[in-house]
Length: 460
Image (cartoon, rainbow, N blue to C red):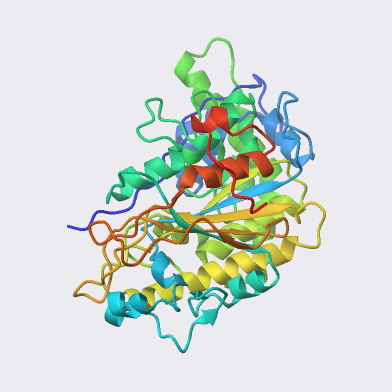
C-alpha cells in the first residue's frame, strides 16, 4: 500500500493576550428570546472552521497590530527587513527530472523511459537543464535570482513520507519536544505567533514551538452565516464574564477572536478574489476545496491552489503586514505511476505561481526582499518502476529564489554511479539551507535553532 504524505498539524495554541470584553457591533440587545446560542451559530458556521483555529491562536490586539502595520512582538525583531516564504511540495518531487543532469550519459542510461525528453529541456550551465515546465525558473536563473542547491538530504534517510517530512520541518531528527526549526525561532525570540503565518488548514510542524505557534489563515474569503441580525447577536454573545467556567470562557474567547478576525482580516481575504497581484487566479476556484487536496496523497492538486495561496501572501506583504515567515504548500508529487504528465502539470503550477509572486513583489519596497525556498521531503529512486513512475528515494534539490538571491549552483551534485540502494546519496546537509536562511533572511545566529553548526551556502 502506498503511504500517504503527512498532513500539517493543527494549531491548538491558546491566546497570550486576551480581552475579556467582546465587540459591540450594532445596537441589538441580546435576550433569551433571540434564540441564538454560540452552539447554534457555530453549527451554522461550518465553513469557517479554519477561522476558528485562528481564534484559538490570537487575541484581538494582535490582529489590530497586524493590520495597523504594528509590530506584534515584545520588541525583539529580526535585524533584517527580509521575508521568507517556504513552499512545501508534499509527496516527494522527482528532483532528477526537475534539475536534469542532461550532460551526463548515465542519466538516460539509468532512467530509461522515465528520462525527460532531451529536446524539450531548458539548458542551464555545467551540463544541467530544467524540466520543460519551468520556463519562469529559467528566466530567474538567467537573471541570477535562482539558486539551485544540489544533493540536499540527511544521513540515514527514511522512505517514509511522515518521518522524512518531520525531519525536514523539525530540523532535528527525532526531536523529543516536537518543535519545528522556525517554531524554536518563535520561542527563543518570544515572538507573537503573527510573526509566522501558514496558509492552509493547519499549522505546519515547521512553525510549531514549545510555547508559541505560528498562525494559520484560510485561503479564500470569510463569510459569517445567518442574517445581519443573527451576526450582530453573535458578536454580542461573544463576550465573557467572570462567572463562566474555564472551558466556557475559553470558547467565548475564541468567539471574540473569530469576530475580531473577521473584522480585521476579512477585507484582506475578500480582496484576494478581486485584487490578484499575481494575475493568475482562476474565476470560480474553490480555494478551501483546493487546499483540502493540496495536502492529500498522491493525487494531483486542484488547479490554481498554489497561486491562490501566494496571491494571499502577496496581498498581505503589499498591505504592510509585519509577518516575516509564510508557509504555503502544493501536494500530489508522490508519482509512483504515470509520473511524466503528473509532474509536468505540478511543476508548471509551481513555476507559474512562484515566478508571478516574485515579479509582483520585485518592485515594491515591502516585497523585494522576499526570499522563496522550495523543498520536498525526499527525492525518487534513480531507476523508474514498471508503472511509468518512480519510488521513494533520498537526496534532492532545493530551489531558493528572489531578488536578494545570488543565483547559481550550491552544494555538490550527487553521483549517478555511486548510488546507495539505487538512490542518490546526499552531499549537502539540509540544515545548511536553514542556517543560511536564519542568518541572512531572519538575521539570527542559526546554531541555537539547529542544535549545531552548519556551513552557510552563500546563496544570499
